[in-house]
Length: 229
Length: 229
DNA sequence: GGCGACAACATTGTTAGACAAGTGTACGAG
DNA sequence: CTCGTACACTTGTCTAACAATGTTGTCGCC
Image (cartoon, rainbow over all chains, first blue to last red; front, side, top):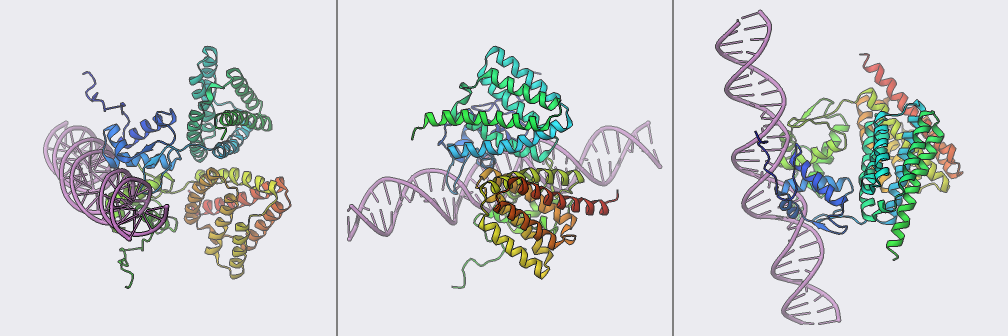
């Protein structure tokens, strides 16, 4: 009784199946939430000590984060939380447009609104009502993920997931959710869902593009105002 | 004298900077060239022994291949060369269309033909003349890679690279280059380049889609004739 | 003869410790 | 002031070992 394996590890609770994956999850979280600020150096030993694991385990987690673009690294040097440039933001969002526009075009062609996306949409409306900005930003990304997932294309989901990972980091670094206009987000999502339900592919694609480019512009604006170079 | 570190490793020569990367390269090659047939099991120890490295080194190489979809794996089991299904082929190519169509649309918008792609195109014409099917298949993929690279978008290149890796495997498994019509490939590439030079985005996109879907259909046809289920 | 429990095996998961090799830096010599 | 060397730090790689897990095969029982 009393959950036998409740022995918790130093800093954060690690509860996933694989140890490297648990470290990966924890580290990823602390990167996108800006606990580790951009530019911060993460040595293998430091990570190993922080989570109470061996260096090879930490190494594996770091390697995965590097391969996903959430850390940068030069050979024989500590991994580093990247500071995203203006070009990075534009690259991220222009590729996101490509993927999601295509996804929504296909979705609308079938004229069927995926239930998972609908559920997330309702959750988002709730967050708009309570004006919970942080939760709203998270749910917003979730909504887009669900739309892509509804495609049942493993490769599309994987590529989109890669992009979204870096976009999370991006949003964290620019603190853009403070500028978010909750009602607009909800309204635009509704428009996209309506276009899908109506089977209007061109409209769904157009609204998706506008929605994402709007987010990008807001991000860039904040970015410019913060780093006047 | 006499290059001091010329001690060669068992099967294949490994000459890259990092040992895991060298194993990765060699293993990848032997997978896409069907030296390791689909369904074959690759244990960490076997790989380690084959290339004369320690198990952790082999593990890293395997992990990377798994993360790129060139190997599949269940926990506590040997990695396995995946056998691509009909659905996989369709998924691969429909996503490839999304990416390359977008890339060519942008390229044509600038109306500038990338020199690297032109160089590869000339190389391909040479292979058509000498009727070298294997080299032609390789150069064909290279041509598409160059078109995407010309975009100068790190994320687009990375996503496209992932797709192309699996497509290489796909082409190897179906032995599709035997069905390739060299003159057609060259002709279609020329058409795409012309559309880009003319700054005709819609045409470039349309030709690209047709070119890729043609390749897909040829692949599927061969696939169906080989596995009549 | 068929079926289930148990035991042996194979494989990966994770750790520890060690040494080599590469990189940047600070310090000292010229 | 400049250059080169030595040192400290970090990663790269290996060996060895044990734990955890999944598979397989065998044996006895029904």
